[in-house]
Structure formats: C-alpha cells, structure tokens
Length: 138
Image (spheres, rainbow, N blue to C red):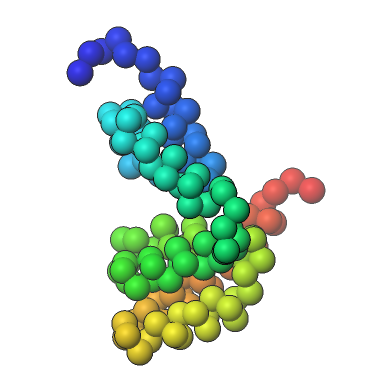
C-alpha cells in the first residue's frame, strides 16, 4: 500500500461509524484505515437500513441489534458491544422491561443463556449510564 495516501477519508469513515454506533471501536478505525472502500459500503448500507423512513424506528433497530447480539454472541468478550447497544436503546427510550421481554422470547429457540446474558448486560448498561450521568459536569 502506498504510504502517502490520504488518511482523511478513513478518519471520516471511522468517525461516522463511531457516531452511528455511539462508540469508537478500535477494529472499525483499523478497517477504515486499511480498507476505506469496504467501510464506505458499510456506512452506505447502514444509511439505507437506518436513515431512510422505514417501518421500524431507530429505537426498534436497537432492540433488533440487542437481540441479534445476545443470541449470536452470548460470551464475555462481546459484552461491551452488546452493552453499547443496550445503552443506546435505553437512551432512545426502550424500557428495561421491553428489552427483557424481547430476550425472553429468544429463550425457546435459543436457550436460557440468551436471557441471562442479555439481562446481565442490560443491568450493567443501566449502571454505566447512571455513572456516566453522574460524571458529567452539571
């Protein structure tokens, strides 16, 4: 790869992904730097899915993310990713009871670990939001 290529587009793409996801993931920044064309397509796909008027609003999209991550990634290394979506969903107005009920629906096809893992992440996300709110200057 050429050493002199412009890094601004990669930085912009990583910033856009961080803005949409509520957090800057080191993996996203790395991929944006090394494969900006790939990340550009991901950002465009996200815009098609989330930013155009659709049947479901952003709050429901977060709930879908939460369910998918809880089902697919019920393991500790992925907990920060799931908690970030939990926090964003809560900030968008999802009630903890809505999240818990949606996770309960997953028990039959996916097993109880999804409910236990998901609710544990949700409770941690609620605690982190409280701590973040307290840490903000008044």
